[in-house]
Length: 175
Image (spheres, rainbow, N blue to C red):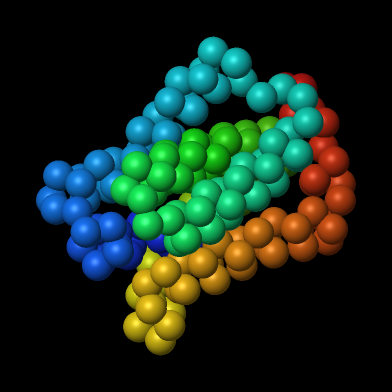
């Protein structure tokens, strides 16, 4: 989320890039939530149980790709679809990350690790919005979102290389 803060720029995208009004902006703003809710419902019925590392990093990678598509799109419908995919991909990553924290952290440290994880998630969203606003002021709307999407892809790729055990994790620990 540090580099993928496209949603912070949605009001400007709606008016300056996609030339849509308040209703169009509302659908742009709702699209990530709709994608996340649909994916959450799907994961309720078919939870990820194999290749969990690939699923987590795959979610981040798809999030980055959807961000790039959104940055390059000048079509309202494609932009809404990209944002819905972005939300669904984020849900996959969140699902796996939260389960990893709960199931892989030793009992004695679970509360502290959960608190640090929660602080990091909250801070990364806020810092990501700040980063998006700052880079948009420097480079413009679309270039800022494009660079953020590409940075997300680079981070996902680098982390799969730096943490191969995590990327290759097949199953969650049995409880």
